[in-house]
Amino acid sequence: MEERNLICINCPMGCPLTVTLGDDGSVISVTGNTCPRGDAYGRKEVTNPTRIVTSSVPVSGAKSGMAMVSVKTASDIPKGKIFDVVSDIKKITVTAPVHIGDIVKANVAGTGIDMIATRDVE
Amino acid sequence: MEKVNIVIVGGGPAGLAAAAAAYDAGERSILILERDSMLGGILNQCIHNGFGLHTFKEELTGPEYAKRFEDQVEARGIACKLNTMVMDISPEKVVTAMNRTDGMFTIEAGAVVLAMGCRERSRGALNIPGYRPAGIYSAGTAQRLVNIEGFMPGREVVILGSGDIGLIMARRMTLEGAKVKVVAELMPYSGGLKRNIVQCLDDFGIPLKLSHTVVDIQGKDRVTGVTIAEVDSRNKPIPGTEEFYSCDTLLLSCGLLPENELSRQAGVALSPVTNGPVVNESLETSIPGVFAAGNVLHVHDLVDYVSEEAAAAGRNAAAYVRGDLVEDRSHEIPLEFAGGPRYTVPATLDPAKMGDAVTIRFRVGAVMKNRFVDLYLDDERVLHRRRQVMAPGEMEELVLKKSMFEKHGETSRITIRVEEA
Ligand SMILES: Cc1cc2nc3c(=O)[nH]c(=O)nc-3n(C[C@H](O)[C@H](O)[C@H](O)COP(=O)(O)OP(=O)(O)OC[C@H]3O[C@@H](n4cnc5c(N)ncnc54)[C@H](O)[C@@H]3O)c2cc1C
Ligand code: SF4
Image (tube, rainbow over all chains, first blue to last red; front, side):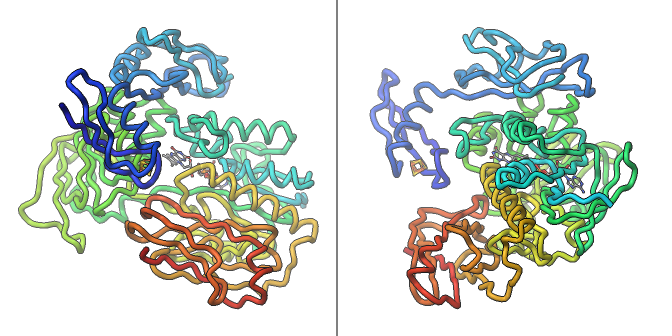
């Protein structure tokens, strides 16, 4: 048995959660939550925490002289892969024009998720 | 002199939403003046996600959120002048602005919407002793450098202040390879959103020291380290608690201040609490026909509410231009409050002018648990809402409906009371 203490981030209450894990890593209980969203958050955070990663990469040939284009993972990636994702896009430079949603790096860090642009640069 | 019915000062999310809403209310003579080379305001540098959850039910990044509103403005064919700095607004609503192509020019505005946003509190106000070496940045400046210019200000970082920009930058700089050693916060609670504490600090094991401040900055040419210490309940450093952190960069995230030089010059009455204009239910300032919305009015944490508020200001500006907004302001009732709120926006309300509903926004001065937020018309309680927790970092809102006034009848006092449950 293992206990993990978290803060639920789903509303300003910020309930302190205690998630109890069995020896096989499965969730036995979530306590401290005030509503069901806290229970779901506690379970996911402990078993499969995920995050959107955002960054910016250099862009060349922009008419506006913009130096950088902002990017994000198209959906959540496992939390443990954050640094892999960031280092995988370190060496990229994209060429203008770029549009919101354009893939900047497919299957970033082998996550199966694409890194996409979040702004237009003409 | 050129005449424009509605001049909007600032092309951030507030200005864009005000413009689109004024257009949708039937107004066609609208001009947005923006000093930057692009629309979108502060959102351009906020490349993290978490915008627009309320409005679009998805988590957008700042530039994506801004783009949705830029598209609305473009689709409506609303005129914008970029790289254009508004220099002055007269009480008669003559707007003086300047740019490279037109030089200095003036516009006679039928109505003005102030949407200039806010700026960061400067270090001068922080009162830190010692030299002024290089390597000290406001968190917002660092955000612009990293995200827009692609320049990393430093490698070893200490952050003073736990406002959202500081938290976001702690993560951003960590991902860019910097070592963020500590975030020190003067207050016993963080001014930032819970979600940012978890995802920007806890995720990376960055310690947050509450009730701590920077007492010394080392380094002559460049910062070489800072000393932080715990403070007592009167914010005085406690001797013996000093801790030294070596670093080459100190980021200051000590809060935002509405940018109201223009409003002040114009003679708009400002609130000493929010540093923004005092407005009535129509978001109209003390000068008839001059409206305000967004961070220039009071600092917001969620852009969704900025857009909502600004849309109301835009609609009211259109009504003013049409002559539909009653000019008589003698029936405005001041909103009173007790037990927690530090201010309310709007500050006054005229039930006859309010439309179907008015959203009242406020912030409390300290963390409070297990409260009721009650709204009284005279002695009748018309709203009774439970709040598990309220914090200075999270804006509160109440919706006051016209029907409440109709049911209550003649009203002479409106009071918001925060009471223990
Ligand atoms: C770092 C940071 C992180 C944030 N994170 C989040 C988040 O995660 N989620 C969320 O929902 N919200 C977030 N917010 C809040 C939200 O982004 C802001 O509240 C919102 O951008 C404010 O919009 P605004 O239009 O009032 O101001 P701004 O975006 O500041 O726009 C004001 C505009 O006015 C222009 N201007 C000013 N003076 C003049 C002048 N004299 N002449 C011409 N133009 C002028 C400026 O150039 C600027 O473009 C964050 C804010 C910051 C600063
Ligand atoms: S458990 Fe429910 S009430 Fe508590 S913080 Fe999470 S969402 Fe809010």
